[in-house]
Length: 252
Image (cartoon, rainbow, N blue to C red; front, top):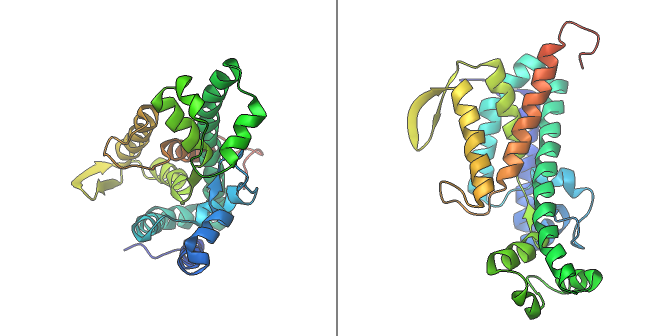
């Protein structure tokens, strides 16, 4: 069994402490308002949430599976790369994850906003209506936006992101590039699959789910593009380091 590495151990401790804070401070609502990642147009958004949301989780099982994956993939990656490069990939992947997911949200949100603007609704008044309360909107919008567009428009404004999944996808990408022939298994599909097929397969499933707007496995409220963004960031960093490992441009 792989011995847990020091940085991974400390990250797990921080995540657990944050989860305990979620359960005990302000009934969880206040803690989420402070530290979950809100849509930037929402008044609840704060810049620190870009980092703090990586240590927040939506429930005990969410925390458990993410921390299990952090131990399983993070420890071997840290043992090879060292703590500094491990943390660089970890946080870079988290930032790549939030950038792609929020970028997708902006695209969807402003698609709806542009339709309302074209119909004569005042841009600032539309934002003020959205800010007036959770899931509140102007009933007149129903004549402009389809039910799906309206639901997406309002839900994105009120959306929150939590979890270390984006960071973990970057670490998994690094693990796969370092150990392409390592055999991995899904819990519900106990068939060994080599990492060079398993990890790209997981990323492809997230990409398809994100485009469809619904998980292939039926799970809801998953930031699929965050997973893709984290994985791509981890892959690009590892590719660059491997490509430049013998010249002056290497990071370490």
